[in-house]
View 1 (cartoon, rainbow, N blue to C red):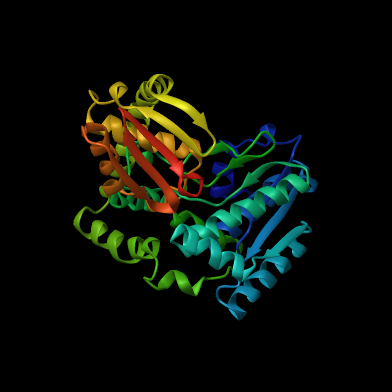
View 2 (cartoon, rainbow, N blue to C red):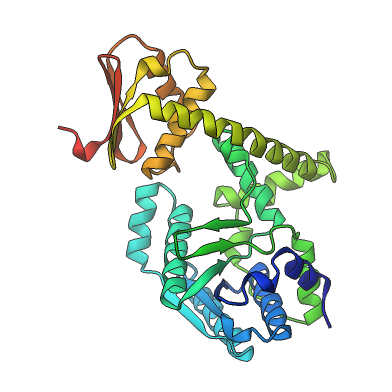
Length: 340
């Protein structure tokens, strides 16, 4: 029997696209990832492609015994379906250091999780890495970025397919599905899953959005807020394409002395631009330099715009050790460890 969720997954990401490649499926043990795993296994069996699949599981160790039980659940699940599983327990000290560096344990865990999964995929010869992001994750992400002070790019939808490097491509086959689709599917299969107890605690911003903000939006704008937010996201995508060309032109003309950890921005090439364009210019530059964006909110981007508008020499410090100094019509951006 082919279930509706499997049909939608197969239609959105046909086996014809991956029949010649190995695939790493990220499986946490939660409902979303279990539904992704089960649907991919059932689709692969139908097309005689089961040998192409393997699973990757990350044990954060954050919930002690509960985290260990998640790992055992995933190992048992994959064993029953005769699919190899590779598990890593994250080092708690490394996670703590990364969390302090980024100002967020949640961001640190996400970054380390992707690093391991990408490495696992590479070592096992996979071309694709699959994660179980859903339409609900899409909406939560847009809301999170919106209230953190994002630019136009941050309002764009999560991409369904994104190259991580020359070897690995990230794919999100469940991105059009809602959590209700997930739970209905697992109920049809009579397939259990793990529930992360930390998801029910409004400790992290993401949980607060899911547990507190979204129910309010649903009560005030039932069946409307989701469509409106996704419409805004699609519009941002279209505007973003135009903006991308504009920013590329500005960077080619305004950025000099472009080194991995520093660059010089010519003020006169930007000072006639609207504040929004200046802010987006610096966001794009931060991303290009691979400088952490987690603690850079609207306040920080506005400070950089003020430096462009100002006629005075000044020096400002930004999160993660990035320093900006305006002198002689130029703004020097540099990692503070490189400042003399």
